[in-house]
Image (cartoon, rainbow over all chains, first blue to last red; front, side):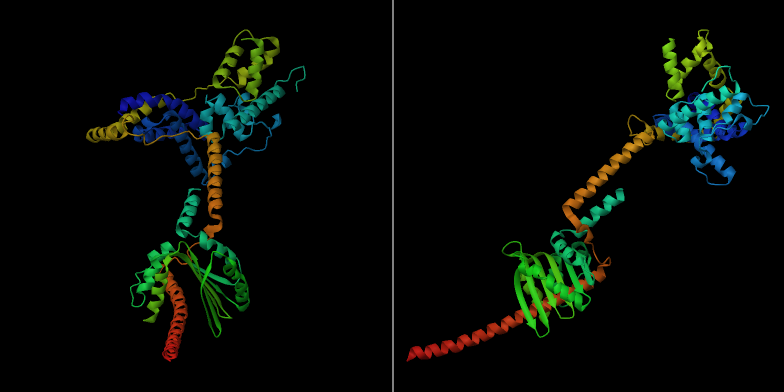
Length: 172
Length: 156
Length: 195
């Protein structure tokens, strides 16, 4: 495969890959580095990619693994994905605990009240436009699990939102 | 999982036709104080060529065997137990008594199990030495001639 | 979109069961003018919390990636890359050669099924063997070293042979005795018959 074909086929993925990396690394320049590195690897494996049934999926897994490696070496520990994104018991913090950073919108702050796992899945879905399969690949969670997490996250968001913008009529 | 199945298969192939010896083994192996030695056909085939003088016929004989089982008692009490248990051979219609030799302190009984009129599938030797009891069971395809040859080789 | 459908979709949404397309439909609905009063609150939530895709990708990333690929391609000498291509064509042409790499997506569902299937096969195999051979798998070679086995075999066979020998030699002696006795008897019989 020559450079032109490769670019045509795989460069369009860079937005999704960047978003995934940014979601995991939470830093724009780190995410850029991750994307660059991933593309180098993809170029090296370009012939094998062609034989895959789902090369896009592979790319996402690749960048996700790369990000996990980066996170692990940054922390200097060998935390598995599960420990890095551990789901704390289902508690959402009270409004009073929300940090009011100026740069964050209220919604962004709301999302940060969610437990880490719910936060990640929520963001992947609602801000990174990831499909269920993609979320599965990135988090390693099962589809059933992800649905439950999404459900809880969305309900939590709704609850928190209602608490902030409370109406005259009571809602439970 | 795969290694487990492979291991099982290997064990079964190694043990070869051990059904005949299985019963005897079961009978005695669970007893405390019994030393058991089992040599399989494969192991017999792997043994160095027994071409030393006098052993020539042992090598020939060993080649016809599917397995050798040797059970030895380790104490007098165990010997008693083994002695009583060997009525198994005496009462079993499959086993034919070949020879009984009584010699001062030692009692030796030979049993054979025939496959056909000329083929012997099993040769069992029970040696009762008062303090020590030994059972040697050889399973395979032997003829009476083979057994005779074996004794002749002792005369050298 | 009908009111009833929206409510149904909303319920599924909060159960996590909607796909991307359905969620887009919901958003589209909430962005429109057709939102009934009882759903106004929901509309507010949707438009602020669930609106979706953010474009925070750096704009120069694309061009830098394109340059990166061009550089990588140039680094490899054209001769090598060409011959590499040929080799690749020959060995990895999906039409002629079996694919070497195939990522079969393993989700936990298929993993579970494979695990269950594997366990069933294992149990079946073990029980089959166990049924046919009972405890025969207890019977294993005592010696792993053929030399040791040889010594023990020799010892055992020698013991057998010696004991058999004792028996046979006794038999021979007995036969000899009987022979002698026969001779004596014959002599006597002849003597008697001669009279």
